[in-house]
Image (cartoon, rainbow, N blue to C red; front, side):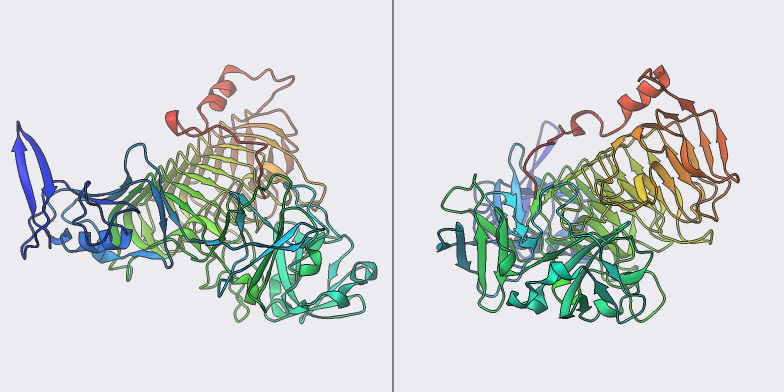
Length: 619
């Protein structure tokens, strides 16, 4: 253990680390360690001689937390920290005696925690088609990043639009009873016999608010038979969208468009077709670690607590479950469909790059989470309370941005504030920017959500007007735009089920346009779905959305829509049991001063507001 020498000078307390080992530990009021990718774990962890790994710093902190008289700060210097397994923080790594353990970036520097591996030694495979190849060993993944840009998993028809994900094949339909089949136009299967690895080809389908992915077992005529469990999943044929836009993915025969890749699992070889802008040698990263930081207590009575993570960049997380299970969820990329019970959520939540479980008073602030294989930041289950997720940039996310997948009355007091969530649902298009399940007493304030293919903010996750653990959802001052880029049955803000004390207020929602490939369900600024009651929708501005509100899926009653401003139709459907008063239709952009004030104050505050990067290359 290290002894800290305290030096008081003119009333200011300083601390320093000394190299010799001591048996006793006497922490200072504030104690610090330093970590740098160029350091060594044999070092004492000082600024001059930093540790090399975050895990070693964590273990060093754990030795001295029992006698904390002040915060412990672990400074992460700039550079990339490549990890091969999750960095786990449990209750032994918590702050004690009312103090915190803080992991933060050195001012002006960017520490990057990466779960990716560089793919090297590329060779020309097909000169005419400009396809290169490289060996990947035992790595398994569903994404790659080439010169910093997300690759496209080889597909047919090729992608022609990065928002709607077209091209699509149309005219498909899932059969009525399990085991389910997919009936398609025979012309689209005329070459299927040439697909060399049929068992790994996926059919990707769009259906109202859902994306579905099913692996092919066999093909007979114009019928596609799915592998299990997809063939038995009740989500496969649930309120299907007519015509079912779809494509086929993951065959070397589909590798014919720039930016596409294919992983041959039989030969452990990755193939990539260069884009015009690609330069050689290629810089290719494949993700290998599912969760980068796993902040997880042992139980609800033994939680991890009093931890802060600040200014850290997390990137290149992995998620490969769809390789063996397909992608079957009821809604919003939450839990995997449970085949064995009638429950709508199972014990298998979709994971995140930064993950919380059995946690209390944990803060994730001013971090960047990008280029993930599933969610960005998520509280996945168990009890998570009094946690703060603030001022983060969550971008280029395969699934959802920030998720609180919680269903416990003890999970109170969480806050999601001043975050920017953009380019979410990059692989699993039915994802939300921010989602809160049956979480009580939660605040979702001053966030900006933009550039998604489904809903911006979603809360509730319970059907009918039955009691649940959801209550007091405060959703206010959020800036939401350019969501619903593909799906329907959602909007800027979507809420489901009975949530006593819910307030939706002072949000600015604008420019949400229906996709040509959506179904005919509602797309609204604020969407109160089945079971909604006693919710207050007040002082919001809805601009350039086809309908301002939806509140007609019964039971749906005694919701109040008051003092809102809109320039489109007030509602797609509004049940008469709801209260609609003092709402203002605005013509020719002549917004009253009250509406302009709401517009200006929505979104992250001050320095937390980030410029929109619309138009940059995203895959």
